[in-house]
Image (cartoon, rainbow, N blue to C red; front, side, top):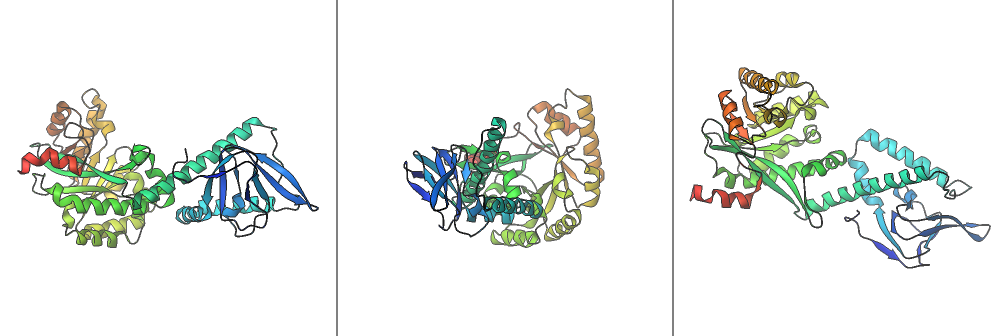
Length: 399
């Protein structure tokens, strides 16, 4: 559960820390039991006995004051240390309002713990509350562990890009690829993006991941480009909401494409509707600067958001990507078919081309071609694959 952290093991009777020690971390008990002791009128007094799933030393996460109590292992204890430095880094990258609320809560907790009465003794008056408290602590530690793992993955080359083909429906030729990130975790194997990108977004780590993805896709593009058979080939890279509000984004993109001698016109940046909702004015300025740089923009998952028409009017979108939720049932659902048909017609009337996602059968591809859809993406044309596997697949084509 806490694979990203090192453990510290303490034998029965061993002191973990004592009152007066400097503290820089909290501890979560993975196995065993510890006692919390204070000195009362010159005598030691146990004020709490806590076990698996509990946390202690939390005050050290928000202040630099000496420890106010002594903690000893009552039996062999396996502890997960949570360093102040990691928590501070996560708080620095988190939403300012959330950070403020959390710091206020922790400060109140610290004041309560340092009151003259000392820490309150544990009670078992409510089993449900205790279970809920342990569950919440476990969830928080899992998130800290995941965030720590993401940071490590960026420096240990654990992230990999997989590329899914995007084909020209009129002739079936390969027009480009979409870059999709995967995490090859050393212990947990392949982790899909939906399992970690949400936390990366919350902690601010998504900026580093986004830049890594963009840099890697541009680095791989000369190889990928050999496999295409289209007048204007492209590679699509996703942008997050956090990236889209970063003033350095345009300069970062410019530096990366210059480093890899990549034509800006062959880089397509994909955004979802939700990405553009948060800071529309800033988003508009940044997107227009990206267009001036030569990049093109695609609106991903069209139809699943809540103000698609407004986005088509407000932003310089060049490609509309229709979500698989409407493509997959097309042949069985007249409603889905009409939504797709009208979306394609609308996009074309606005000067956009269209990519249909989630094409899994020849029949769906044929129906989309009949509707004059420009491009198709899905398992019918190819699953996402690593660069090495694509090289093996397309080797005969460029031989």
